[in-house]
Length: 281
Ligand SMILES: C[S@@+](CC[C@H](N)C(=O)[O-])C[C@H]1O[C@@H](n2cnc3c(N)ncnc32)[C@H](O)[C@@H]1O
Image 1 (cartoon, rainbow, N blue to C red):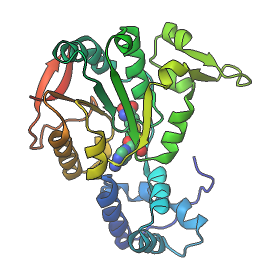
Image 2 (image 1 turned 30 degrees about the vertical axis):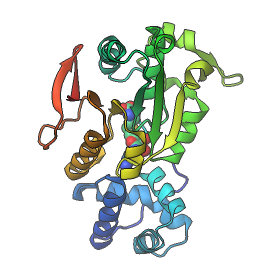
Image 3 (image 1 turned 120 degrees about the vertical axis):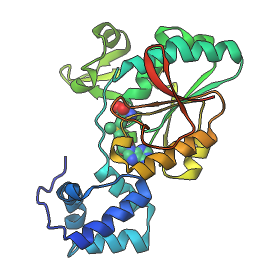
């Protein structure tokens, strides 16, 4: 939610320039029908800076190319909708099939699991909770990395405090077991158990940045509900970067409404434990 409600006029020419710059830098693509949405998201930035038009914002981003300005842009553009136990069949497949298989092949090697667009953290925390429930966190060295391109999302994730909507799918007994009400919030906010939260390494990373992917790549990657905002070209490039950096076997989980169907990738689509997974084998 932003303070300014005014949406400024975004001429087609400025829309195309900004859209292409944003696409190049973040992978996020605004179709022509999303011009108003982009104007709505970026108007507060134009107004706050006292700019005369969207072109001033474009020049700032293109020619100053400053990290702090881009962070503010990504915060404004990013959609951070997420919740615990979202599309849980995939997490279940990880816990019941992928981890046991890995453990039998590499009993002493650390298994890295990367949640590559973690938003406010409910996805990696769901993974950690499910692994803990199945006692994998005590049986196998497991490293969980959670990253996002939005600093605002990561700040919230690092706090580990959640409101009602985050719990819409989490079984109540797990909420009781792993969360405590935040004093003074009248039961509206809950803090995750530090033992679970502390298992996760939070990091800023952009999926279109080759160096970020190279640093964090893992045999298990959850990259869910971010490709819906990307162009097919950005999805293709990101998936190929994952493939190139992942060890074999490697498992890529994408969102239920996302598909690599029309793209050329080296991954094979497999059904594992009732969930669809892209496998590098
Ligand atoms: C809808 S959330 C998905 C959260 C979680 N994975 C889930 O499925 O519930 C999308 C997230 O993708 C992030 N994002 C968008 N573009 C990104 C990029 N280029 N690199 C990394 N994260 C990005 C956004 O900041 C946002 O937090």
